[in-house]
Image 1: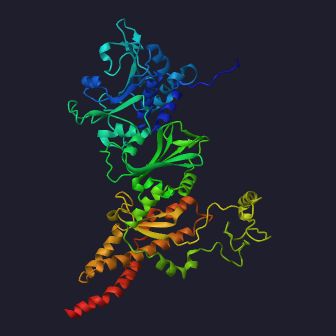
Image 2: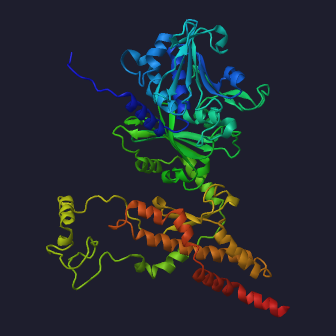
Length: 601
C-alpha cells in the first residue's frame, strides 16, 4: 500500500466549492439530476417501474405551499445507506457505484437553491426512513439536520409511519422533496429560463431533455399543479416519452444521415402540428448523448442555416448524435469533446450539406418557390462590376519614406516612422525595429510554411452576394425570424435574406403608394423599385465588409459583427441618397402617367 497523505477539503472551503459549482448549474438542472436518480433506481430493480415529478401533496396539506417532489419505485435505501451516501458530496466509485447519481450532480444542482432543506424519504424491504439535508446558517455549512428524540438526544434518521408512504410506492422506492429557501416558497414555480410556463414547464423540460425514456420506466409529470386538485381536467399527470416520440408524431418526414463521426437525425415538421404548449415542436438544432439532449438552439440561435437549411428552418429539426469522443461537461449542461474543446459544428455542417436528404432539398425548393418577387441580382451585379475595384481596400500604402518593403499582396504589419529598421530580401515584410519581438515571432511562425499550401476555405468565385426577399405573408419567413430586422447574411451561401416586412422598407413603399395612388397597379411598381434600391444597398454593404476578412486588425468576430442583422439593419436606415434615388426611379416610370392623368382631368 502506498504511503500517501491524501488531499482533503476544509469544511468552509467545501461550502464555497459547492456554492461555486451550484452557480455553474442552470436553474432547471436539478430536475434532470433527480429524475435521472429515479430512473436509475428503477432500472436497478430489473423490473418495470414508475417515476413521478409532482407536488408533495402531504406537505401541501400541512403548509398550504407547493413543494416539488421526485417519487420513484426504485430499489430504495435503508437509513444507514442514506447516511453513508447522501451526506458525502460525491459517493460514486468503488462500492458506492450503485448510488452514483446520488453523488455530486443532484446535490450541487439543488443544495444552493434549497437552504431550508431537501427531504429524502426512502423505503427498503417495507421500512421507511427520512433524513433532511440543509444549510446551517450558524455553521455556514451543508449537512444533515438533526431531529430531537423523546430522550432529549438527536436522531439523524427518522423511521417513517406507513401512512407517510406515497401511493405509488409499495415495498421499495424513494421520495425527494425540495423545500427551497423559505417555507413560503413555491418550488413548483418555473425558474426564469424554463420554457412551457407555469402550466407545463416540468413536462416540457423533461420531454426535451430526454431523447428517449427507457421503456421499463413510466415517467410522469404534473400539469397545472396550481389549479384545484379536484379539477382533474386541468390538474393532472401526463406521461413523458421523450422528444423523439413527440417529433415522430408531428412530422411529415424524417430520417438520419451518417457523417464521419456522428449521425444527424432530421425531421420536417408538419404545418398542422400542435403540442398544446406542452411539447417543443418548433424548428431547432441540438445534440444527443446517452439519450439526453444538449445545446438546443432555436430562433436566431438556430444553427440550421449552417447545415444548408436556408429557407424553412422554423419547420426543420436537426440533432447531431456523435458516435464517440464526446462527453458531457461536469455540470451536464453541454456536450464537449473529450479534451474539453468545443463541438466541431462547422465540420458537421459541411458534411451534412454534402449529404443533404432529398426530402429537405424539395422542402426548401417549395418554400423558395412560394416567394413571389422579382430578382434584381443580375442587374445589380452588372451595375457594380464597373466599380468592383473600389470594394477592395489596399493592403499597403506606398510611401517613399516608409520603412517597410512589401510585396504587392502583403498586408501592413507595423507602423512606419523613425526608429524602424528594415531588411529587404526576396520581397515582402521582414523585420522592423519598432516591433522586433513581434517580427521575430512572425518569422518563427512562418518558417517552414509550404508554398501553395491548403487555404482555410474556398474563395467565393463571385464576390457579390445574392439577395432573396422573405416575408411572413408567403411563408418564407417565420413570425419570430428577422423580427424588426432588415436582413441577415449567410456567409456559407453568400446569400442575403432581406425582410420584406421590415418597416424601414414598408414605410417607404407606403409613402410613394400614397403619392401615386391615382395610378392603377402603381404599388407593385413602387415595391419593385424600393426593393431593388435596398437590394443594392445591402449587396454593397456586405461586399464591402467581405474586403475586411483576414486583414490583420479584423478577426472573425469583427467580421460577424460587421454583417450581423443589427449592422445590416442600421446600414439600410440611411435615407437621403437612397430616397432621392428611389424617387428618381419611380418618377421615371410613373411620372409621365401621373402627368397624363392630371392633363386628362
